[in-house]
Length: 356
Ligand code: GDP
Ligand code: ZN
Image 1 (tube, rainbow, N blue to C red):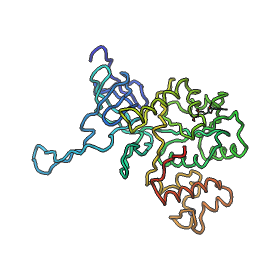
Image 2 (image 1 turned 90 degrees about the vertical axis):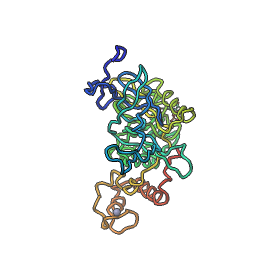
Image 3 (image 1 turned 180 degrees about the vertical axis):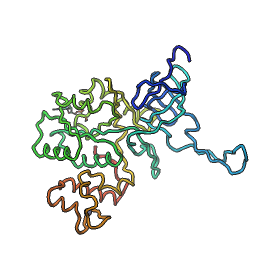
Image 4 (image 1 turned 120 degrees about the vertical axis):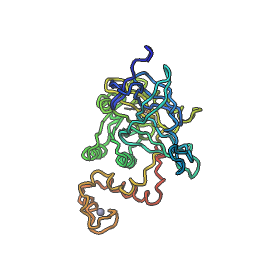
């Protein structure tokens, strides 16, 4: 090990936490950029430009003949990356700023699945932004007018992939109407943190910053609600860095299919994912089957419908519809459920949130 390279240190579950790697030469890090064979990995040694060990990219098929030395019959190079932005990997450093990804560390957190914008017609390639563990859904108090149906859609996406969701109402200086605050109270009662913020006045920014610390978050919401302004309020210059990633992601020569991450300053770390890359969110088929479990407040009534496979749409003695009638479940939330159910039944792939 040259003196230029301190002993690689293995991190635990957050980037940069020092720990000695007893297997010596591998440095643990987080993939922050790249795809299809070339990646930027943030390690305790700095950001290394990495290739990936061939065996991680290939599925080897062995022939049955061959006795002691097994013969490879066929090699299939995987269609999509074995790793994605946000994955933790172990890297063998090969130079001061280069390395080879040798191992993939088990993924933690949710995998945000999205459609590959470069995939041809009829060929649905999925890339996951592994490690994304929070979406920050942003709406404005008045301008543009908040549409909570979009919020419900985003919350279902988050629930179905076990990603935490934070609701941020920005532009509080515009004085939100009473009904909006009431609805947000209902979301808070379901267990979603709600941050009332104003990038202009600074309200709620400290709380937002605290909720971003130590997590990998994506800001989502319609354009004009103040996502960039909030990012900049959290950390000066952050919006530009996040959107610059988005621009190169889509226009750069090395077009990536993954989202990239920007590290937050401050002791507790945390990352922001480029949101341009996660516009088109696809909902896995399995989660649609469990759409009702993505509505948190329905949980109280689970198992109480007369039919065990009740869809809560038209069946007799439905505990969910009873709860809606009594006002225990919000009519708007139920309406979102019914709409999403209908959409899912029609076309599972119609889930790009293209109205952002
Ligand atoms: P984005 O498209 O979601 O990234 O939204 P921007 O951050 O670009 O903000 C859109 C517009 O809203 C800009 O003109 C901002 O100056 C304005 N804006 C952002 N935050 C606030 C806020 O808290 N209050 C008010 N009144 N305007 C804001
Ligand atoms: Zn029911």
